[in-house]
Amino acid sequence: MGDGGITLNQSPSTMFGSVLSYVSLRLLGVEAEEEYMLYAKKFIHKEGAMTSSWAKFSLCLLGCMEWEGHNSAPSEMRLLTKYL
Image (cartoon, rainbow, N blue to C red; front, side):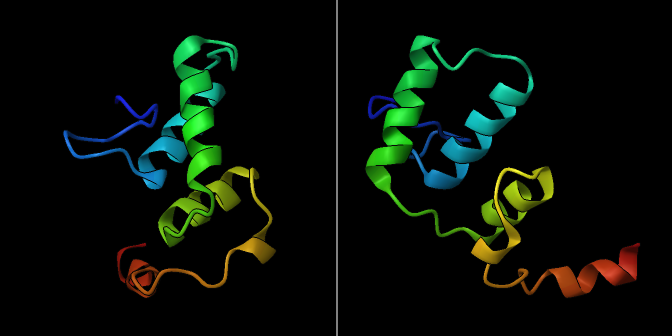
């Protein structure tokens, strides 16, 4: 996107899409010095706090964020027990 962030569709960039895409690309071996990765990193730092509990939960599962930084599990998590 023009603002340096990453979007999951044609909408404006979001922290959710940018953070999860950045982390995914890094896990896949993309170098942090790639031009588009630097733009994404700049967008993430500029936007500040991440509010999506799903993004925080995903980062906690990957070990990229401490569980103390995640206030609570999304309410939808209660429904997982029916499907597991």
